[in-house]
Length: 455
Ligand code: ARG
Image (cartoon, rainbow, N blue to C red):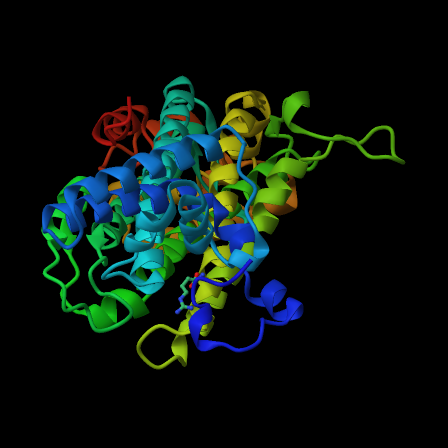
């Protein structure tokens, strides 16, 4: 097949080069956007009189047919036509003849590819936001059921203070909520029309980019033709957003992995979302969570690939930029898959409330509350801290918890400890008393669920 750009050449491209520089194997997923973009472009060419309205109509009808044939699996793309843009133009030409050759008037593949990616990414951002919303709804639902499920909160992975599972889950609702905002903010910069920039310097034809922007649902039109064809910051930005989502997912998964170990025994994953071992019959492994944690690495890799690809290329378009697609697609596919699979894994897990409570009871998670008790009796906090520290040391030696100390034992540390200490340092009270904004008390968490705006 001869090339759409063949005029300048005396020899055919080597087969190895055809194979090397062809992007059809991966940019074929842009076909619908490429066709929709071309239809809007053709209509605009007709409307502005750059081609006749009749020619524009023939092109648009031809493109519609190409679209439906691709959707019905009737089209085979060719490597020698290089990419999705030239494949579609070639197929159109084969079908409607010479008039198809007018479609590319006042357009370059450089503004065309930028258009296609922006349209594709815009839709995929919306899909990712939906997945995030669904996950946030599931987490809020779980939180509603665990407002009183006490568990230890950790720092340094050492038991620190008692919280509830609801509070812990709602931390992720906050993170995923910010991820959502970041995506929507990124979408504003994605949704700008680059078409009209041509190869790099615009065109001498009297285009109407506003018309095309309106047709294709863009909020604005690019203001500089060089910039429009040569930056992929919007793809970097999305991949950065995806990376942050993956960090959040990965930390959550790390906790799921820990919690499902026999050492923690806080949760049990459903059989549907865990796997076995080929050798050890007893194993039930949290593979899904591990794989999400592992896949975060590839998304960070995609981000690094995009940044590195861009950093040294002079304006405007360079073929390096064809490398944007696989990294972007991979980040998108990965983050979407992870968001989709983590949701039912979480929704079906069984919580071992009793083990969570027991863990919160051990580990002196009420030590801060005992110090606060003394503070309320007039002891300066730093002194109270010291006193409780000594009491904890005593408990460790005696194999007791703070609430198991008798008043007589307490008197060795402070004369101010009275009978009311036992209610004050009871684990459930420690949680309930943390009523301040953003705290773990059931009331605060209930309010946080409402404020999060998740149904
Ligand atoms: N397949 C190319 C890409 O993805 C399309 C743009 C090609 N432009 C060019 N001047 N070779 O970047």
